[in-house]
Picture 1 (spheres, one colour):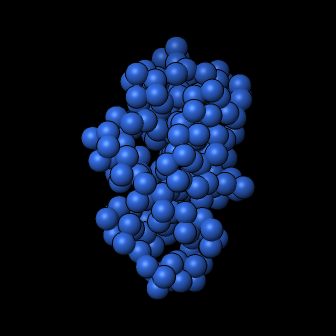
Picture 2 (picture 1 turned 30 degrees about the vertical axis):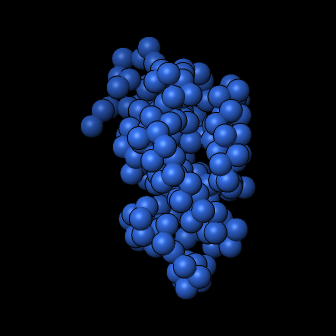
Length: 190
C-alpha cells in the first residue's frame, strides 16, 4: 500500500471506496478483458450520474450481473431484465439495462474480431498511454473516435464523455492532477 497524502481534488475523502478506487485502480493501465468489460458496463450506467454513485453500487452490480460473466450477460432474457429492473441495489434504468446486454454482445464480437478488447482499445493509441490533467477537458479527439466507432457497431450509452471517463479509468489516459501524489513525475506514481 502506497502512502498517498494528496489526491486529485474530485475524490470524496469521506468515502473509503472512492479513495481506494482512486489510489489503486483509476488510471492504472488495465489489460484484462474481464476488467475492461466490467468497467465499460459500469461506465455506461454512469451516464447522467456521478461515478461515485456507480462505484458505491459496484458490488451490487457484480452480484446482479453474475460477476460480469460476459457469456451469461449476453444470454440475459426478458425475465432477467425484469429481475435487474426490480433490484434496488443497482441503477434501474430500462434503457441502460437493455444497452448493457446489447453492449455485452458487441463487446464479445469485438473480442472475436481483434483477439481481445484490450487490443481493440489500445489500437487507437498504438498501445501508448496519453498523459493529461483531468482538469483539462471531458472529451477528446480520442474519445470522440472511439465513441463514434462503438456507436457504429451498435453500442449505446457510450458517448464521448463516457468513453473519455472510461479511458481515464483503464489507464489509456493518465489524468491525475498536479495536486495528486500519483501525478506523473511525482515520486510515488506506479
